[in-house]
Image (cartoon, rainbow, N blue to C red; front, side, top):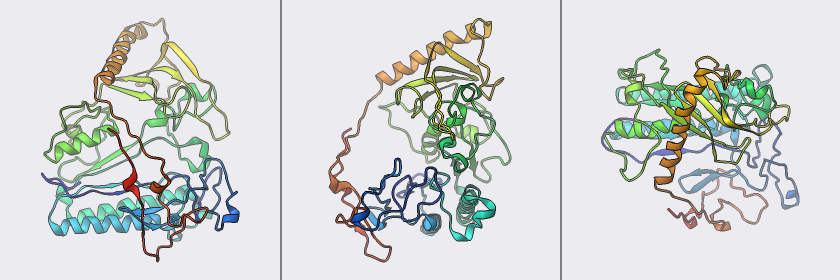
Length: 393
């Protein structure tokens, strides 16, 4: 983001998921290619959505469908570099958001990025992502280096079910859970599921080669960028994120004291808060593993009183505090008050809901006559009828 008091429209790219594509890439279980004719409509596989061909959209126009995953990174890079160059030449501030397809499966890389037989698909995709980030950084350095902040981070830990195509949790193995079965990575509230690296780059403002121990959240990016743009947040609602500009500038070590983690697909009811973080302490009211590489699942276990870890002493989340120990008895009331305050804050804040229409006319499709829609890059882009989507706030 280039700093300033005004904004250009953002440029935003979305990541690919498990839909049908002619270049399905590496994935476990493998997704088949798109059926080319109606006779192939019976081609189905769980979690692959073969009835949906992934579109590549530019604004509301479909540029390609199904998307060619092997050339996606190159197209992202070209559009990002073009956007930065245009913003720089216009002399206006800009905001550029890129949701990378990496390192999500299916892993597909351009032939220029390597011999898969020697590197493997994961390493090759990681190398390709690194090149994309490097080219964007180089463009910023050559155009708006002194006034642009680059914030790079991820949204979750590795998807263990995908085995060699998932990545590593590093030291955050969630040993208590893995010893009882299942994965402690993506979809869980264990550290390996949601703890991700973050790199902030702004020469002259952000100190180089410094690591901060402050407890931050991706939710902090929005209020921080708003502050840096000399703008303000709406006053009629509560934001869970903080302005952490002083942390990234190296002037403060104070981040969040508390965080809450809802279930996002593992054991328990989806969306229910089941884990609370209070400084170095982390309390689990519900535990359970996501599907592991071997297909195993950890059992759902409810804890009353909660399972509490001191992450300063057990970053691997292996040994919880003894319920009878003085440390446990001292921190439990504080955690319970924290959880009560979280529920109270949610209950008294503004509530909004979205109602997205299921009308087939809102589904991006180049040719409704086919089992999967097809649109070649050379054809005139098809404008998706997204304006029919209804949103209720």
